[in-house]
Every structure is written in C-alpha cells, then in structure tokens.
Image (tube, rainbow, N blue to C red):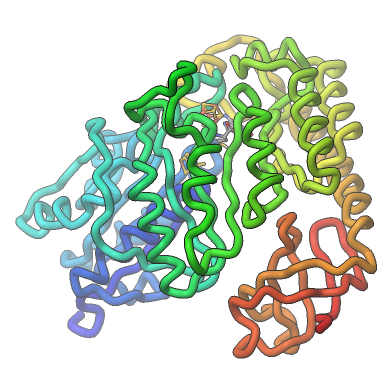
Length: 447
Ligand code: SAH
Ligand code: SF4
Ligand code: F3S
C-alpha cells in the first residue's frame, strides 16, 4: 500500500480536447505532489477522462471502471475519478452505477481538480456537473510531447447538430482571451515547443462571446484575427487549428492561411454527409454545394493544401442513394484523410428518438464501402509527394524501427526517415520523399 502512495494514473478517451484537458489535470496532480504511474494498478489515484461521442466509446469506460471498483473494495484508500463527457452526461447516475467512485466531474471542471480533490480528501463523494465559467489554468500542464502542443482557444459548442452530444456535455461556447492564448504560446515557445494546434469544437466560433465589434459590425476577435495576433510568437514555427465548421468558414481565414507562413496548409473541415436532405436533417446549416465551394476556394489560393474531414454513415433515414451522394463527394474532393463513423444514437439528442433508424448491417456495410474509397483516394493524394522535398517536424523515434525518426509534413502526413532522434527531435528537416502509402510517407533527409 505505502509503495503505491500518491501515484496517479490517467487514461484518456476521445478527442484532442480531452487530451488537452488530461494534460492540464496531470499538471495539477503533479503540482499537488502526485507522481505519474503508467500502470493503473500501482496508482492510488485513477482518473478516467471519458468520451461519449458514440456508444462504444461510452461502454469502454464502464469495463475499465468495473475492474478498479473491485480493487477499491480491497484498497479503500484508492481514489477513483470519472472526468470528461460521460461524467457530464451521467452525473449522479454514475454514482448509483459505481458507488465506489469518489469524484464525477464534467469537462468544465478540469482546471478545478485541486479544489474538488480537497473535498474528496475531506471525506466527500463529489459530483461536479453544474455549468460554470471555465477558469484560466494557473498550473503548468504535463504535456505528452515536447515538440507539439495543444492550446485551447474556445471551449464548448453552441451548434445543435441533431446527432451530437457535444453541446450537452461541453456546454456553451467560452472563448479564451487573445492575450491568454498568446501568453500560453509564448511560454511554449520559450520551453522549446515548435508547433501549436489551436483547439475548439467549432473553432470558427472563436471570439463570438468576447466583447467588442468593429465599425463594420464584425466581431473584433475572430479566428482570423487571432492567427494574425499570435503569428509572430518567438520559437513557434508551425500553427495549426481544428475543427472548422463549413457553416462559418470564411475566405478571410483562407487568405490568412496563405499569407501567414507559420500557418500550415491543412484544413480539417467535417462535412458529415454529401446529401442535402441529410445535411438538413442533421441541422448542419450548409449544402454540399457550399462545402464544395469552400474546398474550391481553398484550392484556388493553395492548390496543394491538404484537406481532411469527418463523415457519418447511416444517419436516420439515409437511403442508398443519399449514401451514394457521400461517396460521390469523397470521390470528387479526394480527401487526404477522412474520419468515418457509423451513426450511433446518443442520449439527449433529437435524432436518437426518430423512428427511421438504419439497421446495424446496413450501417456497417456502408462504413466499409466508404472506408475502402477513402483509402484509395488517400493513396492517390499521397502520390503528389513522391520525389518531392517536404519539411518534416521531427517528433519521435519510429516505434517500429529505431534507426528511423518520424514527424509530420506541413500537410500533416506522417513521415519516416533515417536519423537519430537525440539529434533531430524538434528539428524541421527537409526530407525527399521516396516511398508513399495511403496515410504515411518515407524519405531521406537532404541538406
Ligand atoms: N465539432 C466537430 C466534431 C465533433 S465530434 C464538428 O462539428 O464537425 C467528432 C465527430 O464525431 C463528428 O465530426 C462526427 O463525424 C462524429 N460524430 C458525432 N456524433 C456522432 C454520432 N452520434 N454518431 C456517429 N458519429 C458521430
Ligand atoms: Fe457536435 Fe455539431 Fe457542435 Fe460539432 S458543431 S461539436 S458536430 S454539435
Ligand atoms: Fe468525446 Fe467529449 Fe471529445 S464526447 S469526442 S471527448 S468532446
């Protein structure tokens, strides 16, 4: 027991927001004197940072939790925490399901972990899911990478896509101030980080909730303004941002990306479906024609920009013909990468209640067909890299070949080449591409 004293373990499920939250919560725990333990069984505090975007994501956490709840019956000093989106969705119901839990905390409470733990250590079982203002982080996050970092710019989402739990679990949009964002980036640059990804569920909404409008009636703080404002932070060589929403995507933003050398030519703009009636039922607020126009405009400014997206198959009522419109969009646009998923009905969302649900067989058949097309198109997109010289930011050793290092091109393609990680970590290296695969590249460094 004493050997496992004050060691903590975090398992993170879900998206980049959750990963960023986990890094901040880890920072808070280390500040409180806890030490990281890779093995949860050696930890006296275990935190599951959870995701509920689809049912299978949610179910995963229950099986992890079951094991540790059992362990707690023998080790009553074990502190068990469920944070993140399942915590927010289930709240008190989680305590009834797993009475061994000490703390259930929604994503808005990540920065308040220390206060919540104080209540726990005073003997309380705590549920923190009331909507609150997200406080600025004062402790240093414990980041996984020393090269590339996430920086939240806006929390929450005010959209109401009919399939999606995110607005329910992440709450309303809350933008951080440009000053706070720049200060975090400056600190990162100072620590030697080279790349920053600005994060928001709907990053185009950045600034809408901050005070100030321009003379023309535009919000003073937009994502585009933010990019100009943070662009010259010393040390930071690359800036990325995600996730873009087609409804709010502007040409001004595209121009800024072209103009600002540090902003990478990579756009992640989920389209969800290539069919206008399905898009309408999803309440996405754009048509497939508008989506195509956005991509055309990007390619007009930057012909080589990489484009990635998310798509859902088997949304309630989706016919074979409507699904084929999604295939057609994917065929025409040629994404560099596409995250695909079968529709999963989520509690508290409108579409889950509709009576035109699609069978699991049809969903998985469509998913397979779409994935096959995605891989074919991605392989074709990779071809443009062959024999070209790409700039790669080295992040790590290749886990499968210690003579190689790996990193990403500006377009976000994973790239391997021969080299020593101790010399190259964090360096921007020119790499001549000699081998291509659908989602990764191999090359040689050139001097
Ligand atoms: N804010 C982003 C994405 C958030 S969730 C956006 O607006 O695009 C990440 C992805 O999960 C979504 O893009 C969508 O493709 C998928 N997703 C969300 N809810 C889902 C559901 N109920 N079933 C299947 N996939 C879902
Ligand atoms: Fe979900 Fe839509 Fe918000 Fe994205 S924009 S997080 S899909 S509600
Ligand atoms: Fe999952 Fe929550 Fe992200 S539901 S996808 S972890 S916002």
